Image (cartoon, rainbow, N blue to C red; front, side, top):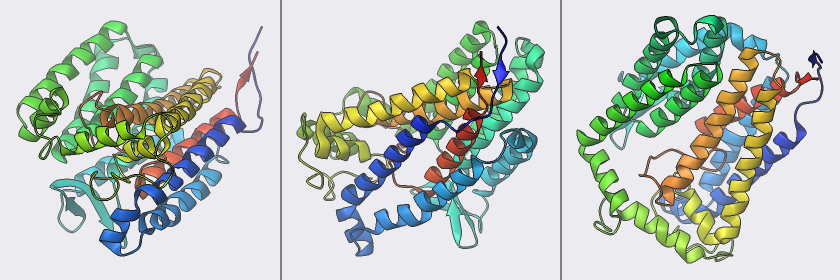
Length: 370
Protein backbone atom coordinates (compact mmCIF):
# COMPACT_ATOMS: atom_id res chain seq x y z
CA UNK A 1 0.00 0.00 0.00
CA UNK A 2 1.29 3.45 -0.80
CA UNK A 3 0.25 6.84 0.49
CA UNK A 4 -1.53 9.18 -1.85
CA UNK A 5 -1.72 12.89 -0.99
CA UNK A 6 -5.14 14.30 -1.75
CA UNK A 7 -6.41 17.84 -1.50
CA UNK A 8 -9.86 18.11 0.00
CA UNK A 9 -12.02 20.31 2.22
CA UNK A 10 -10.53 21.46 5.51
CA UNK A 11 -11.46 19.52 8.69
CA UNK A 12 -15.10 20.47 9.34
CA UNK A 13 -15.48 18.86 12.82
CA UNK A 14 -12.37 20.71 14.08
CA UNK A 15 -13.74 24.01 12.74
CA UNK A 16 -17.13 23.42 14.44
CA UNK A 17 -15.40 22.65 17.78
CA UNK A 18 -13.33 25.82 17.42
CA UNK A 19 -16.37 28.03 16.67
CA UNK A 20 -18.16 26.53 19.69
CA UNK A 21 -15.14 27.37 21.90
CA UNK A 22 -15.06 30.95 20.60
CA UNK A 23 -18.83 31.43 21.07
CA UNK A 24 -18.63 29.89 24.55
CA UNK A 25 -15.75 32.25 25.39
CA UNK A 26 -17.67 35.36 24.26
CA UNK A 27 -20.75 34.30 26.24
CA UNK A 28 -18.68 33.80 29.41
CA UNK A 29 -16.78 37.11 28.98
CA UNK A 30 -20.14 38.90 28.66
CA UNK A 31 -21.32 37.25 31.88
CA UNK A 32 -18.10 37.20 33.95
CA UNK A 33 -17.08 40.77 33.09
CA UNK A 34 -20.26 42.65 34.02
CA UNK A 35 -19.19 44.01 37.44
CA UNK A 36 -15.51 44.45 36.55
CA UNK A 37 -16.43 46.22 33.27
CA UNK A 38 -18.87 48.56 35.00
CA UNK A 39 -16.41 49.38 37.81
CA UNK A 40 -13.50 50.12 35.45
CA UNK A 41 -15.15 51.56 32.32
CA UNK A 42 -18.73 52.42 33.28
CA UNK A 43 -20.00 49.94 30.66
CA UNK A 44 -21.03 46.44 31.81
CA UNK A 45 -20.21 44.94 28.39
CA UNK A 46 -16.90 46.71 27.70
CA UNK A 47 -14.85 43.49 27.79
CA UNK A 48 -17.35 41.61 25.63
CA UNK A 49 -17.42 44.37 22.96
CA UNK A 50 -13.64 44.77 23.02
CA UNK A 51 -13.06 41.01 22.67
CA UNK A 52 -15.56 40.77 19.81
CA UNK A 53 -14.35 43.83 17.86
CA UNK A 54 -10.59 43.63 18.46
CA UNK A 55 -10.11 39.90 18.97
CA UNK A 56 -12.73 37.53 17.58
CA UNK A 57 -13.81 39.33 14.37
CA UNK A 58 -10.28 40.20 13.11
CA UNK A 59 -9.05 36.78 14.32
CA UNK A 60 -11.71 34.88 12.34
CA UNK A 61 -11.02 37.01 9.25
CA UNK A 62 -7.27 36.25 9.50
CA UNK A 63 -8.05 32.54 10.05
CA UNK A 64 -10.24 32.49 6.93
CA UNK A 65 -7.41 34.00 4.84
CA UNK A 66 -4.67 31.85 6.40
CA UNK A 67 -6.51 28.55 5.83
CA UNK A 68 -6.37 29.34 2.09
CA UNK A 69 -2.57 29.91 2.12
CA UNK A 70 -0.50 26.81 1.28
CA UNK A 71 1.21 25.72 4.52
CA UNK A 72 4.60 25.58 2.71
CA UNK A 73 4.60 29.40 2.74
CA UNK A 74 5.19 29.29 6.53
CA UNK A 75 8.25 27.09 6.09
CA UNK A 76 9.85 29.82 3.95
CA UNK A 77 9.20 32.66 6.38
CA UNK A 78 9.60 30.69 9.65
CA UNK A 79 13.07 32.05 10.50
CA UNK A 80 12.33 35.79 9.80
CA UNK A 81 9.07 35.41 11.77
CA UNK A 82 10.90 33.85 14.73
CA UNK A 83 13.60 36.54 14.58
CA UNK A 84 10.92 39.26 14.57
CA UNK A 85 9.36 37.71 17.70
CA UNK A 86 12.74 37.76 19.47
CA UNK A 87 13.28 41.44 18.49
CA UNK A 88 9.78 42.31 19.80
CA UNK A 89 10.53 40.44 23.05
CA UNK A 90 13.66 42.59 23.49
CA UNK A 91 11.73 45.77 22.64
CA UNK A 92 9.32 45.35 25.58
CA UNK A 93 12.24 46.42 27.83
CA UNK A 94 12.90 49.62 25.82
CA UNK A 95 11.06 52.72 27.04
CA UNK A 96 8.83 54.15 24.34
CA UNK A 97 7.95 50.66 23.08
CA UNK A 98 7.43 48.52 26.17
CA UNK A 99 4.63 49.02 28.71
CA UNK A 100 4.97 47.83 32.31
CA UNK A 101 1.76 46.45 33.85
CA UNK A 102 1.68 45.06 37.43
CA UNK A 103 5.49 45.11 37.47
CA UNK A 104 5.85 42.90 34.38
CA UNK A 105 7.18 44.03 30.97
CA UNK A 106 4.99 41.94 28.65
CA UNK A 107 3.29 44.54 26.47
CA UNK A 108 4.59 46.41 23.45
CA UNK A 109 3.09 49.49 21.83
CA UNK A 110 3.25 50.17 18.08
CA UNK A 111 1.35 53.37 17.33
CA UNK A 112 -2.27 52.90 18.48
CA UNK A 113 -1.83 49.12 18.89
CA UNK A 114 -0.53 47.30 21.93
CA UNK A 115 0.10 43.56 21.97
CA UNK A 116 1.98 40.79 23.77
CA UNK A 117 5.00 39.58 21.75
CA UNK A 118 4.99 36.33 23.79
CA UNK A 119 1.76 35.30 21.99
CA UNK A 120 3.43 35.82 18.62
CA UNK A 121 6.43 33.85 19.92
CA UNK A 122 4.30 30.76 20.64
CA UNK A 123 3.29 30.52 16.97
CA UNK A 124 6.63 31.56 15.46
CA UNK A 125 8.68 29.08 17.56
CA UNK A 126 6.39 26.24 16.41
CA UNK A 127 6.94 27.14 12.73
CA UNK A 128 10.68 27.71 13.20
CA UNK A 129 11.30 24.45 15.12
CA UNK A 130 9.18 22.46 12.62
CA UNK A 131 11.19 23.83 9.64
CA UNK A 132 14.53 23.53 11.45
CA UNK A 133 13.96 19.95 12.67
CA UNK A 134 12.68 18.85 9.25
CA UNK A 135 15.90 20.17 7.66
CA UNK A 136 18.03 18.36 10.29
CA UNK A 137 16.10 15.11 10.10
CA UNK A 138 19.24 12.92 10.08
CA UNK A 139 20.93 14.87 12.89
CA UNK A 140 18.09 15.16 15.42
CA UNK A 141 19.39 12.21 17.47
CA UNK A 142 22.93 13.62 17.64
CA UNK A 143 23.93 15.41 20.87
CA UNK A 144 26.05 18.12 19.21
CA UNK A 145 24.06 18.58 15.97
CA UNK A 146 20.58 18.04 17.42
CA UNK A 147 20.21 18.58 21.17
CA UNK A 148 22.71 21.43 21.77
CA UNK A 149 21.43 23.77 19.00
CA UNK A 150 17.86 23.01 20.12
CA UNK A 151 18.76 23.89 23.73
CA UNK A 152 20.44 27.12 22.54
CA UNK A 153 17.17 28.29 20.96
CA UNK A 154 15.24 27.43 24.14
CA UNK A 155 17.86 29.18 26.31
CA UNK A 156 17.52 32.50 24.39
CA UNK A 157 13.73 32.41 24.64
CA UNK A 158 13.83 31.37 28.33
CA UNK A 159 16.18 34.22 29.24
CA UNK A 160 13.88 36.84 27.65
CA UNK A 161 10.70 35.40 29.23
CA UNK A 162 12.27 35.12 32.70
CA UNK A 163 13.33 38.79 32.42
CA UNK A 164 9.71 39.91 31.77
CA UNK A 165 8.89 37.83 34.01
CA UNK A 166 6.38 35.44 32.39
CA UNK A 167 6.88 31.95 33.81
CA UNK A 168 3.49 30.68 32.64
CA UNK A 169 4.28 31.39 28.97
CA UNK A 170 7.77 29.94 29.38
CA UNK A 171 6.26 26.72 30.74
CA UNK A 172 3.87 26.46 27.77
CA UNK A 173 6.66 27.15 25.24
CA UNK A 174 8.94 24.51 26.77
CA UNK A 175 6.12 21.91 26.65
CA UNK A 176 5.38 22.81 22.98
CA UNK A 177 9.10 22.64 22.08
CA UNK A 178 9.54 19.25 23.78
CA UNK A 179 6.44 17.85 22.05
CA UNK A 180 7.83 18.91 18.64
CA UNK A 181 11.37 17.68 19.49
CA UNK A 182 10.03 14.30 20.65
CA UNK A 183 7.87 13.94 17.50
CA UNK A 184 10.84 14.75 15.26
CA UNK A 185 12.63 11.58 16.45
CA UNK A 186 14.73 12.86 19.36
CA UNK A 187 16.24 10.36 21.78
CA UNK A 188 14.35 9.62 24.99
CA UNK A 189 17.64 10.07 26.93
CA UNK A 190 17.98 13.61 25.51
CA UNK A 191 14.39 14.43 26.53
CA UNK A 192 15.04 13.01 30.00
CA UNK A 193 18.18 15.19 30.25
CA UNK A 194 16.13 18.25 29.24
CA UNK A 195 13.38 17.39 31.71
CA UNK A 196 15.84 17.00 34.60
CA UNK A 197 17.68 20.23 33.74
CA UNK A 198 14.37 22.08 33.44
CA UNK A 199 13.20 20.81 36.81
CA UNK A 200 16.42 21.94 38.53
CA UNK A 201 16.13 25.38 36.84
CA UNK A 202 12.48 25.65 37.97
CA UNK A 203 13.37 24.83 41.59
CA UNK A 204 16.09 27.53 41.55
CA UNK A 205 13.77 30.11 39.95
CA UNK A 206 11.08 29.44 42.57
CA UNK A 207 13.57 29.42 45.47
CA UNK A 208 15.24 32.73 44.62
CA UNK A 209 12.16 34.81 43.78
CA UNK A 210 9.92 35.55 46.76
CA UNK A 211 6.59 35.90 44.88
CA UNK A 212 7.12 32.55 43.11
CA UNK A 213 7.94 30.92 46.45
CA UNK A 214 4.79 32.46 47.95
CA UNK A 215 2.68 31.06 45.11
CA UNK A 216 4.18 27.62 45.61
CA UNK A 217 3.60 27.69 49.40
CA UNK A 218 0.01 28.88 48.85
CA UNK A 219 -0.50 25.97 46.44
CA UNK A 220 0.60 23.57 49.22
CA UNK A 221 -1.42 25.36 51.95
CA UNK A 222 -4.11 27.58 50.35
CA UNK A 223 -5.78 28.15 53.74
CA UNK A 224 -2.74 29.88 55.31
CA UNK A 225 -3.02 33.37 53.77
CA UNK A 226 -6.62 33.69 52.49
CA UNK A 227 -6.57 37.54 52.45
CA UNK A 228 -3.06 37.89 50.99
CA UNK A 229 -1.21 35.69 48.51
CA UNK A 230 -3.87 32.94 48.78
CA UNK A 231 -6.76 35.30 48.03
CA UNK A 232 -7.20 34.47 44.32
CA UNK A 233 -7.04 30.69 44.65
CA UNK A 234 -9.36 30.71 47.71
CA UNK A 235 -11.96 32.84 45.89
CA UNK A 236 -11.62 30.60 42.80
CA UNK A 237 -12.16 27.42 44.84
CA UNK A 238 -15.14 29.07 46.55
CA UNK A 239 -16.64 29.83 43.10
CA UNK A 240 -16.02 26.30 41.79
CA UNK A 241 -17.40 24.72 44.97
CA UNK A 242 -20.55 26.84 45.09
CA UNK A 243 -21.37 25.90 41.49
CA UNK A 244 -22.04 22.27 42.41
CA UNK A 245 -23.23 19.95 39.63
CA UNK A 246 -25.52 22.26 37.61
CA UNK A 247 -24.26 25.72 38.65
CA UNK A 248 -26.08 28.83 39.87
CA UNK A 249 -27.21 29.65 36.32
CA UNK A 250 -25.68 31.79 33.56
CA UNK A 251 -25.23 35.34 34.84
CA UNK A 252 -25.78 34.39 38.49
CA UNK A 253 -22.18 34.25 39.74
CA UNK A 254 -21.54 35.97 43.07
CA UNK A 255 -17.72 35.81 42.89
CA UNK A 256 -17.55 38.01 39.76
CA UNK A 257 -18.80 40.99 41.80
CA UNK A 258 -15.28 42.14 42.68
CA UNK A 259 -14.46 39.13 44.87
CA UNK A 260 -12.47 37.05 42.38
CA UNK A 261 -9.52 38.82 40.69
CA UNK A 262 -9.24 38.60 36.87
CA UNK A 263 -12.79 37.18 36.33
CA UNK A 264 -12.54 37.60 32.52
CA UNK A 265 -8.84 36.60 32.39
CA UNK A 266 -6.98 33.76 34.11
CA UNK A 267 -9.87 33.06 36.53
CA UNK A 268 -12.67 32.67 33.98
CA UNK A 269 -12.91 28.89 34.44
CA UNK A 270 -13.91 29.45 38.10
CA UNK A 271 -16.84 31.64 36.94
CA UNK A 272 -17.79 28.98 34.35
CA UNK A 273 -17.86 26.32 37.11
CA UNK A 274 -19.84 28.64 39.42
CA UNK A 275 -22.49 29.57 36.83
CA UNK A 276 -22.70 26.36 34.79
CA UNK A 277 -21.51 23.86 37.40
CA UNK A 278 -19.60 20.64 36.87
CA UNK A 279 -21.72 20.03 33.75
CA UNK A 280 -20.46 23.29 32.14
CA UNK A 281 -16.87 22.49 33.13
CA UNK A 282 -17.07 18.99 31.63
CA UNK A 283 -18.67 20.39 28.44
CA UNK A 284 -15.75 22.84 28.00
CA UNK A 285 -13.09 20.19 28.74
CA UNK A 286 -14.83 17.81 26.26
CA UNK A 287 -14.61 20.48 23.53
CA UNK A 288 -10.84 20.76 24.12
CA UNK A 289 -10.44 16.95 24.14
CA UNK A 290 -12.40 16.67 20.87
CA UNK A 291 -10.26 19.46 19.37
CA UNK A 292 -7.12 17.54 20.43
CA UNK A 293 -8.32 14.27 18.86
CA UNK A 294 -9.11 15.96 15.53
CA UNK A 295 -5.91 18.03 15.63
CA UNK A 296 -3.56 15.11 16.33
CA UNK A 297 -5.36 13.13 13.63
CA UNK A 298 -4.51 15.92 11.15
CA UNK A 299 -0.89 15.69 12.32
CA UNK A 300 -0.86 11.88 11.88
CA UNK A 301 -2.08 12.17 8.27
CA UNK A 302 0.00 15.26 7.41
CA UNK A 303 1.79 15.06 4.02
CA UNK A 304 5.34 15.82 5.22
CA UNK A 305 7.51 16.31 8.30
CA UNK A 306 7.14 20.10 8.43
CA UNK A 307 3.33 20.03 8.33
CA UNK A 308 3.25 17.14 10.82
CA UNK A 309 5.48 18.92 13.38
CA UNK A 310 3.61 22.22 12.86
CA UNK A 311 0.25 20.51 13.50
CA UNK A 312 1.61 18.76 16.61
CA UNK A 313 2.99 22.09 17.91
CA UNK A 314 -0.26 24.02 17.35
CA UNK A 315 -2.51 21.37 18.93
CA UNK A 316 -0.10 20.86 21.87
CA UNK A 317 -0.01 24.63 22.48
CA UNK A 318 -3.80 24.93 22.68
CA UNK A 319 -4.40 21.77 24.72
CA UNK A 320 -1.54 22.10 27.21
CA UNK A 321 -2.28 25.78 27.80
CA UNK A 322 -5.97 24.97 28.39
CA UNK A 323 -5.21 22.23 30.90
CA UNK A 324 -2.53 24.28 32.70
CA UNK A 325 -5.04 27.13 33.13
CA UNK A 326 -7.86 24.84 34.32
CA UNK A 327 -5.54 22.88 36.66
CA UNK A 328 -4.10 26.09 38.17
CA UNK A 329 -7.46 27.74 38.89
CA UNK A 330 -8.77 24.43 40.32
CA UNK A 331 -5.81 24.26 42.75
CA UNK A 332 -4.20 21.19 41.12
CA UNK A 333 -0.97 23.07 40.24
CA UNK A 334 0.40 26.48 41.41
CA UNK A 335 -1.18 29.58 39.80
CA UNK A 336 0.56 30.43 36.52
CA UNK A 337 -1.25 33.47 35.13
CA UNK A 338 -1.81 32.14 31.60
CA UNK A 339 -5.14 32.60 29.77
CA UNK A 340 -7.62 29.88 28.82
CA UNK A 341 -7.38 29.58 24.99
CA UNK A 342 -10.38 31.03 23.06
CA UNK A 343 -12.21 31.70 26.35
CA UNK A 344 -10.19 34.22 28.43
CA UNK A 345 -10.25 37.91 27.54
CA UNK A 346 -7.29 39.03 25.40
CA UNK A 347 -7.15 40.25 21.81
CA UNK A 348 -3.51 39.32 21.09
CA UNK A 349 -4.02 35.80 22.40
CA UNK A 350 -7.11 34.98 20.34
CA UNK A 351 -5.75 36.55 17.12
CA UNK A 352 -2.59 34.40 17.20
CA UNK A 353 -4.55 31.30 18.27
CA UNK A 354 -6.98 31.71 15.36
CA UNK A 355 -4.07 32.33 12.94
CA UNK A 356 -2.54 29.05 14.16
CA UNK A 357 -5.83 27.19 13.64
CA UNK A 358 -5.97 28.64 10.11
CA UNK A 359 -2.59 26.98 9.38
CA UNK A 360 -3.86 23.73 10.93
CA UNK A 361 -7.00 23.81 8.74
CA UNK A 362 -4.85 24.29 5.65
CA UNK A 363 -2.70 21.27 6.60
CA UNK A 364 -5.91 19.22 7.01
CA UNK A 365 -6.64 19.77 3.29
CA UNK A 366 -3.52 17.79 2.29
CA UNK A 367 -3.95 14.54 4.20
CA UNK A 368 -2.39 11.24 3.20
CA UNK A 369 -4.76 8.48 2.14
CA UNK A 370 -3.68 4.87 2.08
